[in-house]
Image (cartoon, rainbow, N blue to C red):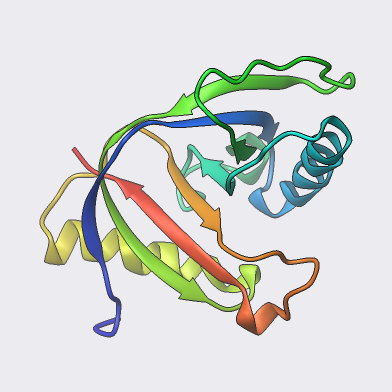
Length: 158
């Protein structure tokens, strides 16, 4: 925990195309697969792959967890052909975020989020805002060993 390297940064809004998901967070992977099939088929210039998480699984039942699979797109991007997917264009809110980087398998992220939450509330003495937290997936799980996956975690502050 004391080895956690957390920075507080100011972010501009991030323009994304997303597919919403309700249910256990570990089931979001299927939405990423559908989203990336669409990105590839439509030749969308996706900048980053992002997962948005609205709820704390410590307090919200798994069946009610809200999340979204996203790709960052250039400003002004419009969905042409959605390929029948429930796609939305939206912005991740700008503002102050506490961020840290994790290297390892996605299955090991839950305790990192718990540590980040404790760090923000305890060490930084900050409140977490109502904006959703999100993860940026720096490398590609399809061609990267799990122990080398890099995930950036972003916790919204108020």
